[in-house]
Length: 354
Image (cartoon, rainbow, N blue to C red):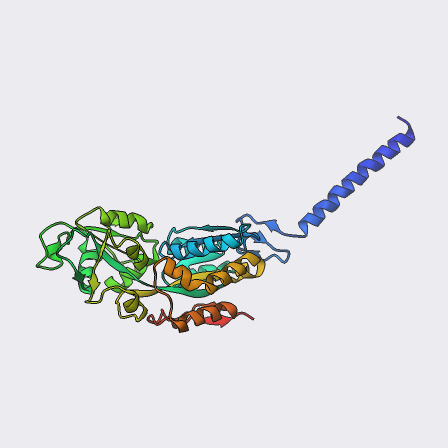
């Protein structure tokens, strides 16, 4: 090979090598994956992976109680925006917050307010959120229609049936109320990751998570409906919407002499009334235009979706408060619920994003 040819070949090799080095430098100046699966920015700060989501994609997880409302909103939105991919899951409020605070979802459905340890998990991962009440629910105590002796029950009697000390000890109807038969009952209720479980145990047994464990548990409320409707000795609990959708297969009991209804739930007269929520990541609102469009659509048509799922709409004041919290990007949890339900736990702060 001539000296000129060798010189030309060497020059070509050097140019290719230089191009590869420059390409590597350009790639290294952006974002790189850290070992924990998060995303490290140029300044060295780590943010949760998936917090904002990809444009045109929205991931929602959480409460099976809120699931029918959010599903209705997602279906309506997709009719107008078929290019947006929305996934809606119902694994339970606790699992939903875990995914949300890890940055894996953009919206979390919840049948109870977020708890302090969940707020801390979000904070540690740089996830800020807007808490938005979307509906009211009255947790319904149901039995099989063949049950002809139980028409009402008290909170104290529910505690007798469901308290931790009842496990293996209180097993017959007559142990709950003396005039009820000496027959064994079977209990059906949500699993421990459910916000409905948390609400029920705190309201009925006086401590969140305090419950007997020898019952048929499921995070899927439809499974609970099937269980109670197929068992003459059953008693279970779940959201009002699931009872409303299955009235021919279930019988709801009055609680402390108050029957669950739209009126008694909206007035909070029914003892097991509660608000339902969605939590929206502010990071997602900033980075993913589809999220803001979807939540705007959700709130603009809220009563339609709530009624479709057969829950109870917010009061006018509550609906206005929900819209303002979203429009103002009011982050954190509200110190007092605007829907008329009782005050939430103390120690949670509210601030507005700047």
